[in-house]
Image 1 (tube, one colour):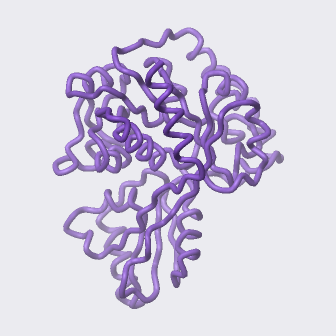
Image 2 (cartoon, rainbow, N blue to C red):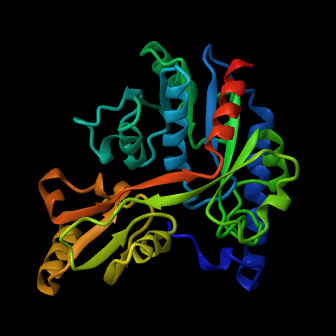
Length: 319
């Protein structure tokens, strides 16, 4: 889904939906309260959030894996494999498709092995059997099944917590204060435009910003498209790099592209003498035989205080 506009501020629609949101938040709190998390023999780092929509969890998880490797460990990712049909497997990026394991696991698999299972405990155990000595949980902060040793909450600095109402009235997945109590640190991606730091109290906060790679060479104008929570972030990155973007097309988050949709985009680009460009998350969902028609803009996180983040993780893994 794309983030609804009425999530940004308190308004008539959000107030009308608030009773449903209160039920949603209440059920989440109840599930977390009654379920006792199971601890596994290796430490678990959770990269989660309190809001629905794209906050930058996947590139954050990649950075965390890189840091854990620098510390001498062999990390593996644990994922439910949202959108995929397989369960209980280790991702093979050369064999599996997004329809098999989901889009984000394929991106994560470029950095470290990924264990897929809707049961996070079983996913963790399988990763350990395959040699993991640190488990990185991509999403799952609200999943009470697996015990977390270090929990990071990732926020988009541009939107913060929006109107601070729970889904569907707003972006919150659970009560804000309850969530903070279970977290060890926060990560704010992008400029903090909503004074989020003040709402986080004494919690350690680490700052980063999305750093897009250079534009592909020998390109004139672009037709850009994305199926992510906030596609405008991708378009803004292109503009900041000086790209000439003639058209943009939004698709739902985690959207699986049909052959018809892709060929329509290819035909449009040919007629307009433009290059098609998309995100890495969308690119992995394009069949290999069609990928040569598309450019991809890679994204990484540039950290304001990476050494502090590294020290925090190092200390947490030793405890």
